[in-house]
Length: 185
Image (tube, rainbow, N blue to C red; front, side, top):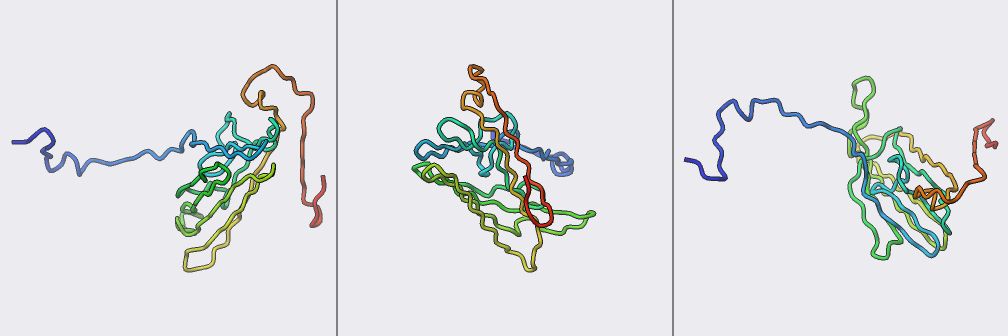
């Protein structure tokens, strides 16, 4: 006899069936808002800005978005979130990240959780600061590429929120190229 919370399993019913969990990326990440004076930032739980398309993420000062994208990548891949913490006064966000498994020609070259990335993001007197700390917890040296991807659009806050009462009259395009060890614009 079985009660309301008990279930009888036949020998082949539950344990012999294929068990599959679909691994899809999240379509959105929870947002955090930092504020200091006339500046504020809307970032996701990883500390990134603009990774999910169509969002209102950015770093704003006096109602203008100065940074519309900011993303940190390890060897071209997004790090995995371990946890994040916002200071009570919303001026500082600390994010703990780690690397995912990395393969080269079906061979594991960097095991998950080898690198610990601490990302600190804060606003102070109208300036946004990003500090990265990376620590290797593996037994061998790790060679990896850390990329910081960014973009700007100088959009008015009403444009970001899709209010079409303001027309933009100028567009800014910045291009940096590496030429003979220097930068040119």
